[in-house]
Figure 1: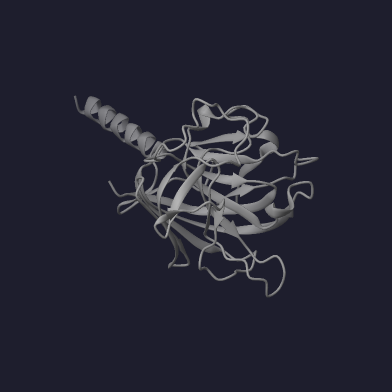
Figure 2: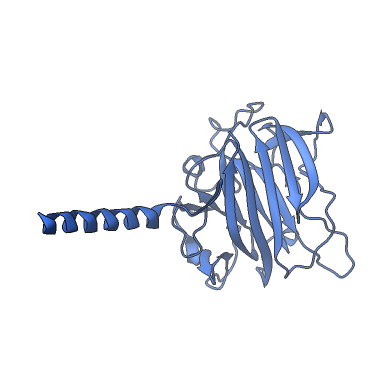
Length: 262
C-alpha cells in the first residue's frame, strides 16, 4: 500500500511538471506569449508560401529572443512574413521589447529599411491566401533612425486592409505618425499596445503614450491577393491575432507578454 502511494505521488508530480512545461509563464496577471526557448505556440505565414512554412528559417530563437533573420535567403523576393501567436485576443494590454539588427535585404522595398512592426486585430493566418502580401490588420509600426539627426518616430499606426478614426474622424492615410522621439536602431526599446475591442487603441513607447485612435475596421487598400469573402469593408475589428513582422529588415523581439482586460 505504501509503495502504491509513492508510485501515485510520482505520477502526479510528473504530470504536473509536464503541464507546467506547456503552460505559458505568468507574472501576476501577465502571461508570457514567448517562452524564450522556441517558437512553440506561434504560427508562420510568409508571402508566396503556405501557412506554417517558416521559409529559410526566417523566424528563429537566438539568445532568448525571437529573431527575424535572412542568413539563408539568396533574395527577398517580396516574402513579407508574419509570425502569429496561436490564438486571438480582444481587449488586452500587450508589452514587448525590440531592437533592429544590422541585416537588411537590399531587394526589399526601400521603405522597409529599419522598419518592422507588430500586427494587432489581424485576420486568422489560416484565412490568408498563399500569395496575399499582407494580413488584414492594424500595425504598431516600428521605425528607427536611418541617418543621424533624422526625425523618424516609432510606435506609429499603419492600416493594411483596415481603417481607423483619428481625432474623431476617419483618417485616409495608410500610416499615422506618433509623437515619439527618434531612437537609434540598435538599442532595446519597450513597446506597448492597449486595446479595447473596436473602440480605443493606445500605443506606448518607453512608458510614454504616443498615439491613440478609435474604431478599427476592415477597409482601405494596400493588401493584395486576399480572399474577397474575408475583406468585408466597414466591419468593426473586435478581436484578432497578434503577429510579429518580417519585411526584409532584421529585428529581435523579447519579453512578449499580455494581460487580458476583459
